[in-house]
Length: 151
Image (tube, rainbow, N blue to C red; front, side, top):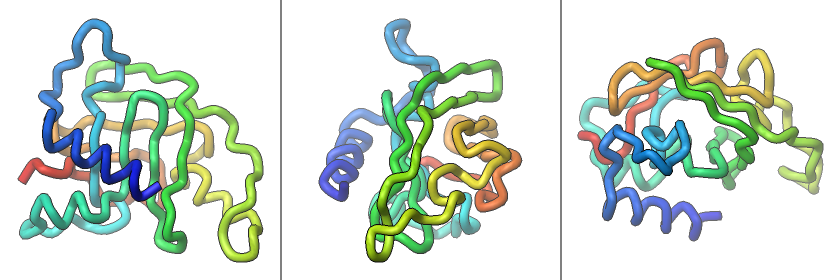
């Protein structure tokens, strides 16, 4: 998982997202890349290197990866559908099912499978600016997220 994240980070540095999706890109292409915050306020002094070193959320074409406070690996959610309206993007994820994870192969808490929102298989993303988003209604993400490399 860390190798995948390193490759994604390298791609984000080589080809930064401009905020404008091309016609063949999925509707959520403006989100591609790594984001930090959400679980905590982002310090104004955070460097891009620190952000890329431990992002909280990573958006790709097919999956969304999420860090948790209690696991060393990222939780992966497969995107079933994504719909973008002005200012918002709504994701519906493939059902997570119960997969062994965590200590002794036991299933982790339900909040780790989703984003601690009203429905674990849905994520609403509110666009605050090209480099800042929030997850309204998600208890664990009470702070805005900031795109890594934007400072």
